[in-house]
Length: 296
Image 1: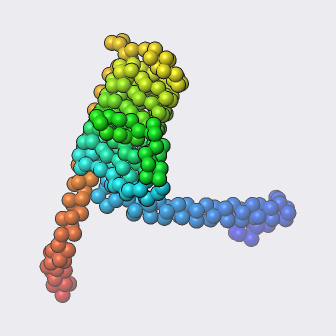
Image 2 (image 1 turned 30 degrees about the vertical axis):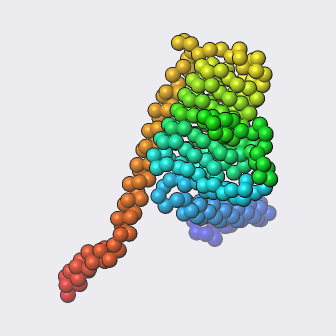
Image 3 (image 1 turned 90 degrees about the vertical axis):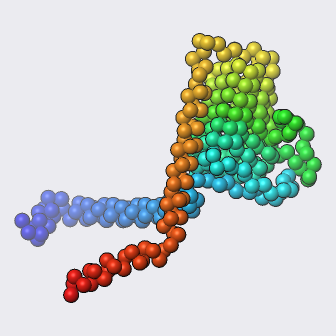
């Protein structure tokens, strides 16, 4: 059937009004699809631009804080080469990391209000974790009760060795977490201290208390009274999460090393390629001359 006959058939089957309605719908759908295509292209270009702004060596370096009424000094993060900060993580201001620390994508460690913030060796900061603190200085004068003292030094947030901060958990200073602690997903530690070897189960909230060493905080519980904190159950041999942190530390220290090695290898490869660009041209010249000779 040719196009004219098809058109007549459509007119006969649907009527002129119905056919016009179909055409209008098709036109709207086409314009809508075009609009979505334009929007999609814009999103792709924006993503490309964002990727282009990522650090060239494949690791994050953090950035200094700015001067404010509550921070009269500018501090840059201290990030040792043995640790790895993902380029999509944010580390700002007076923050120091120990060795073999892993900071995952979309984590935020902000030492730009309460300062300083310190994390010990082999600690991990997983996706979506926030570490922050209330201002520790105002007008050049320390604000009372806004720091935790560890080994004679004041910290807005102190996190010890081999601590796991699981996805979307929050540590808001003044706060202290001692060695070998697991803080579960979406848990909160605020104005609190967590003793060594403890487990804060997912969704738990600790506000204004000190958790004794070797205790666990049940999932979803809210602990704001010191008497309740003192009565938290002890970790025993049959506690199901007793060795959880060991496994988590193993995984994340492996990430710190693996991603760090990969970033270093990629940087070395780029450096070798950029070392002598003339070498590439010289190597390519004989091939070009040979191709010209073959042609003639």
